[in-house]
Image (cartoon, rainbow, N blue to C red; front, side):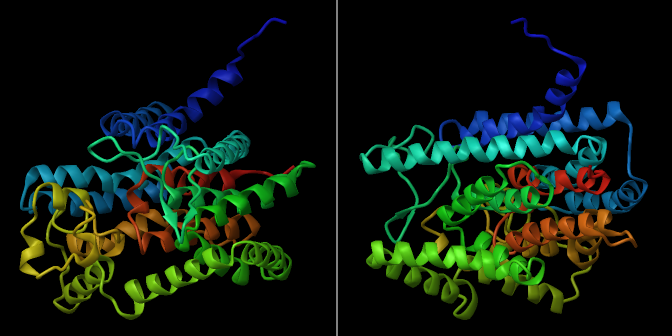
Length: 404
């Protein structure tokens, strides 16, 4: 049998190339951080080239971006360190460039849909091996390693958190959640229920409280007609696990209560502390920000921003973890770019929503935005290419897709 490569195959490969680079980089995160970052930046550069060659732009997106850029440049110029400003300044462009790329490939939704299915299956199979190796006392090669070479896995209440090939349980839960909504809406094959079951398995297996919280909120608000059916399946699963491993479930509930106290009610964490700083900046009418790289982002810790000392920032439990960010995006954005810059940034990002016509496809796009923004409240997902490639990059292809 002769293998022929058609123009369609080449086109599909070129569309999916940044996905391949990003997720290859994601897998290599624990193995070689330098190579991982290089692959992800290669994907970002590739998107810029693709957009430039394609030369197809959404007018509204282009307009709001042009308005925002001067505020970003101003934030970089007033930064305590030009290197820090440029470092984090580029990261602000990640979601914007992703949206431009989304518009460039808006006629290729089916390619993205098949990619979602393949990616979900690949990571599901890998996770089964992860469980197997864990039960045997072994650890997969792509798990995190300490400086002395010791590899470890992330567990909650003694339960292994599902990571598939992407290393991080939070992203594993996030992409399975988005895949559930997209497959439920657009996939019509006979294996639909099987695929939806796999995504639910991945979401629960990740034990990502952020993803689970967003998922249940969407079920109640958007899929309210199917809430009882899906909730019933999940309840049966939880009950089965509880009677099988009651001690672990009790520990899991204790962990959940602890996180609610840590991040919301008690507020003794770097995350809650970062929101304190943000609200203080609002009270001081910080219109144009403290400068890019000053607070919250990886550049602020890499270049030792003096702003943390100025606001008496307390890292609490995060100090010994040696985190590079405060793990909260909103405070990072509004402290660095100010009230005006932050609002303009969100105007750029929600440009695809500025349509008067509301239909089922737009509702799905709203769900994707909600899931991304909800995660952003407790993480840096808005500047993370892995998350962006399973959220914003699907926006224009979904809105442009004509269902057959």
